[in-house]
Image: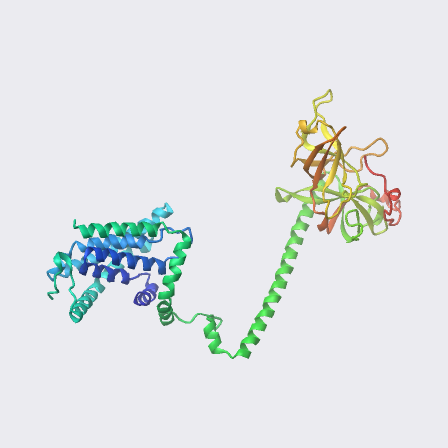
Length: 167
Length: 332
């Protein structure tokens, strides 16, 4: 719902915020690898189901978001140790990098499907604005995750035998 | 790598393969289920974020219309729109008709110019009467001896060749009787209307006179009508198939006449296409698909002699061909 709201809010400026993807990227830091993959599958599947119009002549195949989320989620898992130590800056930057990677790979898939590699004028703007917006939004989601963890008493990280939230 | 991670990766990969190999039907089925769950949320967001879509100040959404108007008002609006729709459809029909007429007239103009270059004089005539009892045999046109039409004048119509602006003449029939301002045309679909014809691009064995065309006599098939829509090309040489007569070959008038009558049809008029070919005991015959649709003739062209003044007054008033004995002499 929020994604739809922000998408229509930002569309007049020619930019978009990948809110669902940002939430996924922030969450992927706080769960185990198998859980991250399950999350990637669920989010990617729902995303493609609701956003993709399958006509038989699509540029990208149905389910490509699952792959993208799995890939970027795995990247995010790499900075888990830093996150455990309460360092947010690197994960936040990585959210921006992962968002940029998502958009770039998506462009590559579409171009590959069309057998024509053209970089539209709006591509660079979309790339950096979306990455920046993702980076700006991610601390909010990190904060919400920690808050939720405190309220429910659930451990945030299950890496290395399950580490309790230390913040 | 931890075992649990490896297992998760394998399961994830398998699940991805399953998704990628889903066919369109499967994807649509999945999408409809998921959209059913998320549809309500999506609709709420759309209602919150999008302005009301309007055309000329009227909302497009059916729900909005329902809220805005009473049932009676909606019924009135519906009837009004329905009326407008019917009017537009009627206009559309008129435009289509005019477009077709325009194409036909352009084609006719090109045809007249084309024939003018060949020093042939044409008179444009409108089909004014066509009786159902003699639909495949005769019709009446609005030109008579006043316009230079004489008995046996060939009647033709332009047909498009390759491009709409390139035309050639197709034979319709000949004038059977002439009146002051009307004439009766006997069609080539009539059994009694015989035209000497040749198969285009096919030659018999080379003789002393050079290559000879494969020729025959074309006429309407017995029982011509809705069931029998082809023409018959008879008296072809028995070896015609060996010479190359086959389905799809074009058939043209040859302009040859018999000893009694001079050929009345000019050569090179399109007659049709060979549909089927049959070798008989003494000769061969072909079924010919007419080049024109005899049901849709509204304007035709009559080829008249150049010096029309001398001929005026020669013809009699209209006399319909009632029996075979009354028929004009046929070409052979």
